Length: 338
Image 1: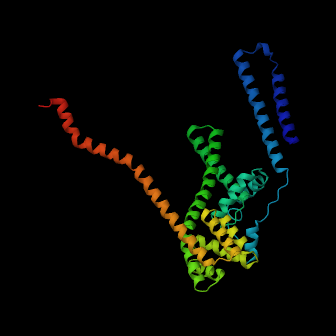
Image 2: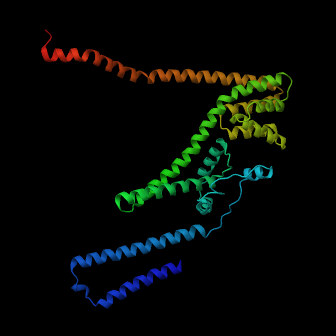
Image 3: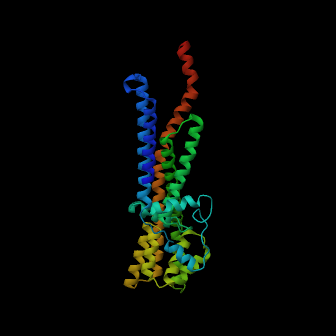
């Protein structure tokens, strides 16, 4: 930092020495020359100030310590023998940029944003075991590359630089990356919501045939292991095998897939255990209730669709009337009725 300031001061002193060697009196300068010299001096001063501000910002960011370590999910996956992920943090040409941005995102004081991103990553399945800080670094990298691309295009067309274009590309790239995980999470949650009643029916039937809750859930999971809801059930079974209670595993399931139906199911199962109610009957009732709610939502959607389609229908009707009676109306206007 001191070296940057010393170099800037040396450049200013050198410019002053060159002006002194010319030997011109400021009163002998023309007004236009004085104006442009003042403008050039301000440009130099502003450039030096911007350079110092950027250097201070970089120093304040990277002078602090940041702990970058593996996420607990990734550590558990590696400990159980799974293959490590292959993302831009491990391979690829932008790996140095990602590891440059990762300490910066660890230092960002954005707890609410990081909790929201963590929830969306969990709801989306998070196959690459991203942490919120890693996904923020990925969003910043996407925004930086898009900003540079837009800046290059703007430079090729307009022959000038624009900070606004770069900032626009940066913000757009970040928003697109965040929206991608949001959209993926919403799609996965909808698939889970459609699958829940069917899986509950199968579990209740298996328990009615004499199977335990764990055995019935394992049977459902084996049927379609790649289904999002079955993947969550598999995670729940793994937690129970590692010593987690059924109550805690069900609550974790409701947290990973934030659905009101799963929260209701978890509460019903916990209450059934406390009261001694047969679990198969409770699950069957919950499945019937979910199907009833789906029918009500379908009826509401049909009612809203009938109202929304009214305006296009009126427009089509007006277009048909004009097409049929338009020529006759024009003929009457031009020639008269008789």
